[in-house]
Picture 1 (cartoon, helix red, strand yellow):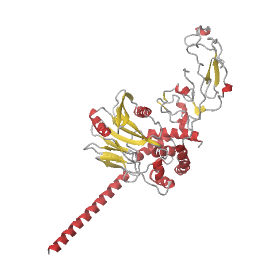
Picture 2 (cartoon, one colour; picture 1 turned 90 degrees about the vertical axis):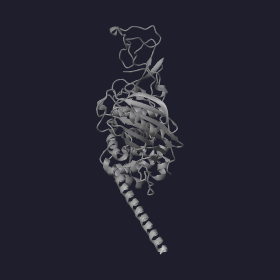
Picture 3 (cartoon, one colour; picture 1 turned 90 degrees about the horizontal axis):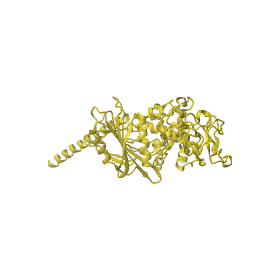
Picture 4 (cartoon, one colour; picture 1 turned 180 degrees about the vertical axis):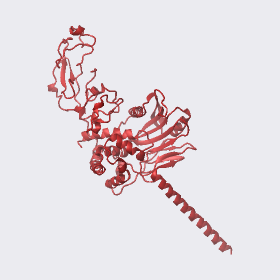
Length: 281
Length: 199
């Protein structure tokens, strides 16, 4: 059901699941099992939000995701009223609508979505009655604070640089190994820190080491590093596209020290999707 | 005669030295071959120049890390005994760009909860490598035989100018609670130092 709070991009769905806003993760799985769709690997991670693409998609009821139109809430479309807000009637395919609350609106009156309104515990079998209180009755399903127009995040320079260098390389690797470009990008983002200056200088996007334990300096460039990675690790993930499977298949050969390594790669997959959307890649 | 004897002695020493050197190289090569196939044993001081930290493996214990070409993130120690205790320290990039210690500790705790079905039973502020750190303790609601039932970790975030920060996390994972393993984790954490990274 609805809960009060400021409408923003993520919170409507956070009503449905526990969401740790500080770091962008849910603590409980998506409750709708059918939200995992065969053709959409991003939907298989049921701890992710909207298939790991929170920039361009939303999931107001926690049941299915839909595209966000960054322009739909232009101010002139917002009706006047003491309170106004957005609600998502019907199922996922319905468009969100603005509703406004007038103080005179009494239980039993018809709200903008056409259904009678009865506050929780009230309604008296549907007959309703007016309220003396100026504030809206508890339980109103349509009382939302007016949202502030969200601004689309900007693409950080280091991530843009990472995509510029790594997308062609990852795409080529993915093609030859029948895996997913984004899986390889997630691995590289973790192992190279989005190609931080240290790994850029070494042309080492996968954190590969030589016998001493230090990262290899690939003087032959990124393609040389990619070939080396493919030769050493390609067979472990050949034909694997699901990111969870990709990470767990690679873990025994990549990081057996950290029990959370595979889980972090999966999280990075979500970040890759998010930043690719933001960076227009 | 004395000169001849000196020359013979010198030649003998030289031969011994060359043989020793050859043996050392051979052992090194055998060791490298073993490393490539699996893990590298670590004793004493462990220095990680990729993520810029060092620590001490407590006396008498063997730690391991993955051999090349696998990335070198840190070391793990499987402790003997029935508790199935495993202690580790891991360095990695803050690639999720959390950038905040509390958020980081929260994130790691949530992941462990998910991974092992544990609940957080306590957190406290502490220090590691001279940096502010957060220690979190997790435990299962009802002990299940063979499963991870207890976990404790300390995490810190080492920021770096203009580069992605480094997450340092040291932890203890157990199937059954054995407080004696805490000493190993404490020794690892107490000896962590930040160091330079290879260029």
